[in-house]
Length: 128
Image (cartoon, rainbow, N blue to C red; front, top):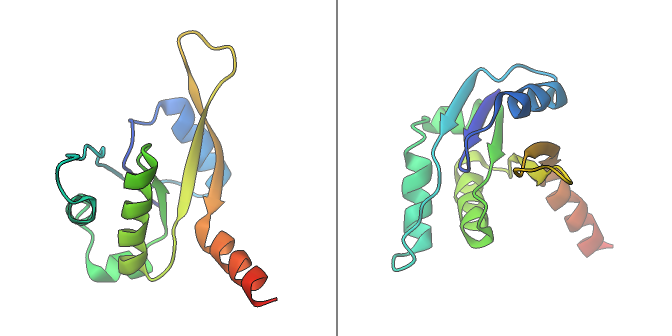
């Protein structure tokens, strides 16, 4: 499994939980935190961010990929649109959540969301 991390670095406990939830080892991690310039096109910056991952066109279409998206919503959706264009489908994404009552704030992996399954289910609701 390839992990594309466009957010904060994952802690060891987060990686352990993510691996357990995926039920496969994470063989390759690409850390590329998203820091966008609000004065420039987000579409252009998303393309450059995804380019920086360095996968080949064949890898984009054949590797098992899970994504920890950027935290800012508009950056996340723009990056996901770019990924969809390269992969041909929406990737699974990691949802991180704060652990209630933790001081300082501690975050855990909450779930893995299969965006393609969400899209396909939405498509069924549109048709019916």
